[in-house]
Length: 159
Image 1 (cartoon, rainbow, N blue to C red):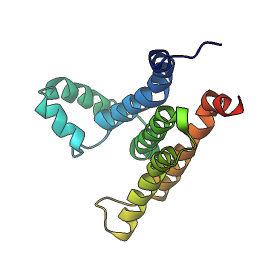
Image 2 (cartoon, rainbow, N blue to C red):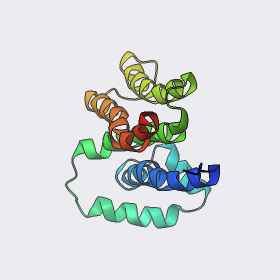
Image 3 (tube, one colour):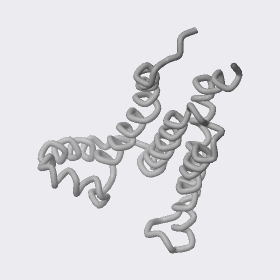
């Protein structure tokens, strides 16, 4: 069987990056933009790139339509999606050497950081409001990519 070159490997990984990294970030960002208060850093970026007019109109529609969206979907789910994306990014990026110490470090850094940031809010060293639902979502979102992506990388170690 011929060896794959690096370009082939990149193209095979692209759908994984789109599905497990880009789409969850997009969904989380969309929820943030349209349903959260305009305090987060992302809103400063919108104004910086002079895109606030269009976003303000859409945000006005989402707030005036009186949608009944659960609070966990607005406040916890975006963070979980970003945690999922970062963990998936590390798994896909390191899939060729998953058992190396560098890969283990980078893949474990995602869950550790997510959990540490939330616990840091609880003890008051990180600005924000601790929420047990956020913590549970972050833990679940840290574990899910390993299950969702295992079929793509486990074959390498079974050969």
